[in-house]
Length: 358
Image (cartoon, rainbow, N blue to C red; front, side, top):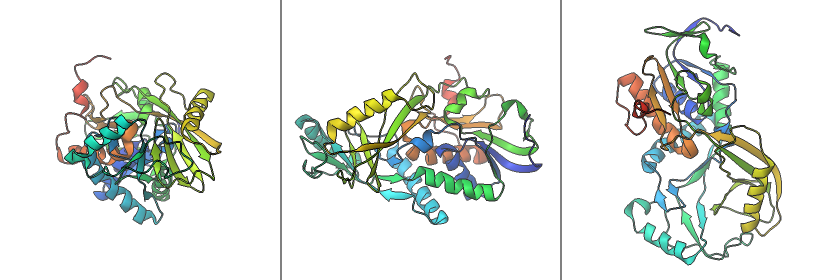
């Protein structure tokens, strides 16, 4: 059974504290609900992620799924936390799409003509010689209303707040220690009305929800240092290059559907270095490498909802590669579903998988 915690009664237990768990915790803060968090840092996809919020899919020049709605929820949350923690968390950061052909430039112009994209795409192309350190044969397209969130700083600040009020436990969750009753659950002395599982790829070990089609997708990133690169904007080509300050850049990412470990690999480093050398023509050095497993789903939509047999157990998962945008919106949807019985969107509700076998 492990550690027995103090006897207390709370409204919610949250299991997992990446972007999903933190976003749901923020909902509880906003509605004055009591809660505790369990997280053993075993799933690191949120902490490894680039932190770039960008509503445009730059491979096809289309707007991401419900991107405007998600942006309207996410930015106020991150700005509010920035003020609350009195530390800089969000940064405006334009994204330059490095074109590989004249045809791509023409496709960009066609995309700009779509009303939904005019808020985010600039009609004027950026000159290919803007950055001497980038090998650009053609011009760039510029995406506006984009930026970067310091995810690790934000999660750590939130965690510190919860730790000070004895509401954060750095422990793995023992599922067999959970007692489920009609109107409450009990976990090692802690009574709660509801449990929300927000474990990312850790879902695969969760006996209550592990039949859901969370596939997982390992991504690796490099941190490089280059005094000559001098980027003031993120650059997207075959890889992303995200300026972090102090001549440091985050570069990624790889996609591996087979390896589900958190161990960095030589193969991924070589793949990323090869990609870097194709577009960067100034010296750089690799100073760090990191890996995480993204919680991806077969239909590329989040996993949100309540357990079919145990209505006080809920899930908030499957944020995929755009968790920085999606997290706050789906966390709000789940809270409203639990607290006010507002139906979940069919696209995110786990009921969509009730009649399917995996």
